[in-house]
Amino acid sequence: MFRLVMTLLRRCALVSGVFALAIAIQVPALAGTYHHTDARHDVKRYPRSHAPHNRQSDVTHLQIVHNDKAVRFYLRFRSASMRGVRFRGFVIFLKTPSHSYRAGLDWRRSGARGDLVDTTTGQPVMCDQAISRHGHTYLIRIDRGCLGNPRWIRAAFITGVNLGTTRSFSDDPLSSNWRRPDGGGPFTPRVHSSS
Figure 1 (cartoon, rainbow, N blue to C red):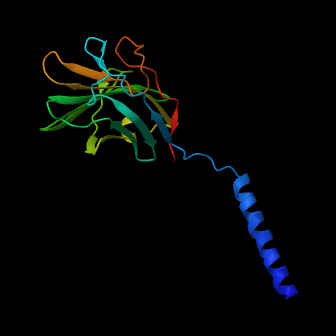
Figure 2 (tube, rainbow, N blue to C red):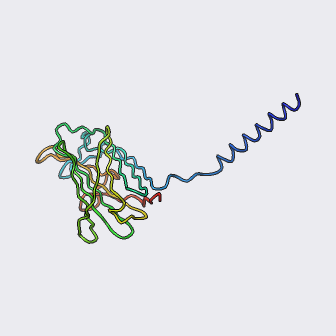
Figure 3 (cartoon, one colour):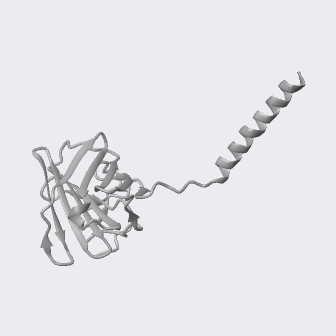
């Protein structure tokens, strides 16, 4: 009986020690990932009046995943409905260690189209960009090779919907302030590649 009790006590001590060690070791966050929760009801109507009730332009969450193959941007909206929407637009400003880029993408019922420009040189970049929708979330994918395989990226955004010739709404997923003259807000911190 004494041996059984001692064996159980040793096992409990071993399990407690392993558990304490696991808690003491701080595992770093997943490299190459950035998360941001955007304020709700911070939508602007062209030309910059507040439109808090517009759900189709209101970004609620942003995630950037930068791995060895691509940079992926996940943007979740309060509503991803296309009812009454002519097109949904995304503009992403990117900074890398050596260049700056602007990616522009449109999502329409007839399909998606986009372009990527190296704003450092002013030259277009021939690159396949992908955009897809899953529920309220849009995924934009840009191959790292199109950006020169950077060690890190920083990004700023403008998203919007066009409901007709004079009805456009936009949101900056990183801020409720519009600071830059081109309409975009602040840049993310550096998001390093996981490779």
